[in-house]
Amino acid sequence: MSNDASRSTSSVSSWVPRHRDQQWRTPRAHGAAREFHQTLEGYESTRIVDLPSLAKELGVGGVIAKDESSRLGLPSFKALGASWAVHRVVEGSDETLSLVTATDGNHGRAVAHFARMFGHRAEIYVPAGVREWAMVAIEDEGAQLIQLDKTYEVAVQRAAVAAAEQGRVLVQDAGWPGYTKIPQDIIDGYDTLFTEIDEQVADADLVIVPTGVGSLLHAALTHYRGAGTDTRVIAVQPEVAANLAPSFAADRPVIVQTGETLMAGLNTHTPSWLSWPIIRATLDGVAHVGDDAAVQAARDLAELGVDAGPCGGASLAGLRAAAASPGALEHLGLDETSTVVLLITEGTETNPLP
Image (tube, rainbow, N blue to C red; front, side, top):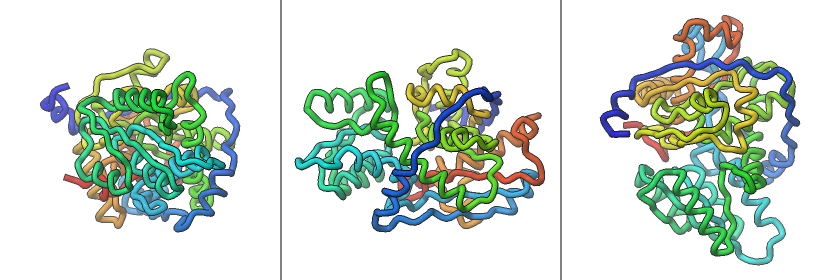
């Protein structure tokens, strides 16, 4: 897609409702990842921020931001999945391992960070469009950086081939047939975030999840569906990287052409094969937002004391897109007594606002 086409959709927002399969059952995530995280230096539950002015704007009882701008010394929730997965990979190893992954920024930095922390090496593949300071942050963690003028999906393929051919370990946050254990560990690591929300918020009626390949969304759905709660969960994607709605229409994961977006961490061509079944069966809807809406939301959050990059701002932009769509609030069961949780998945440190 051309740059002009990308810019032309920068203000577009839309909403696609889903009706979940009420018969779908999934086991709850085990608590081992949370127990592990609690052993790490610097672990603490990330803060929540009550945003009454946004609740008034949107006609709900409460809007709460779950602020992931600082997590285990890194500026993103990705630290949770990467730390648990890397721990599981290197646990009991007497040799120095080389870990390989592809990233658009935060995941790769987190893998590099914990590889170094646990005494191992990391090799990180980055696609076109990753900002310079994100690459510098990865290199500052001691990783070898391989920059490609290709898409994220090609970077994943290159990383997988390199790992297989060179006897290294792939630590990727998306799964496919034959490669599920480590991606599932990453998903299980993210459950810590939702366990914290349970402890911090009395009753979350809706949780809004910025979504790329869908691993964090997978964790949210596993957590709430496994618990048997009626908490609704919706995804938010960039309008120029909306891979879920076409996949729903085709009833299978499809590959879409994407454009440029400031929401770099959400710019993926297809949902994860591993995460697709639970997303297909139990998601309550998906909102599509443009860069302008995400950036404005991030600026609004900043005025309220919440540090949000474009991906973090996508949560509020998605809530606004849904609220502006006829019938959406009714579909989600929201009224003046409802509590909405926005996942602010990154701060501005690695993805500054323009």
